[in-house]
Image (cartoon, rainbow, N blue to C red; front, side, top):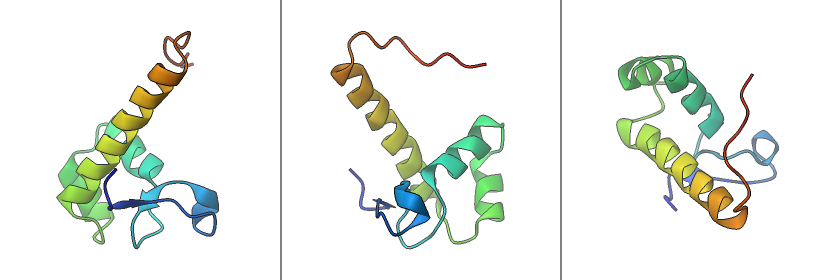
Length: 80
C-alpha cells in the first residue's frame, strides 16, 4: 500500500489517515462521494496534494478487493 496512508491506534482512533495529518481516508472519500472535485477537496484541506487524494481512492479500492476476496458471500453493502 501507499506510504501516503497511515494507520495508528493513537491517531483518529486507528482510522486510516493521510500520513502526517489527521485527515481520514473516509473524510476524503465522503467529499468525493458528495460530488466535490479533487480541486475542491484540496482547497478545503490545503495540507493535501493530488497524490494524497489518489492514495485514498487506491486504499479504498484495495480494501474492497480484500473484503471481496476474504468474504466470497459478500455482494456489496446495503446502503440506505
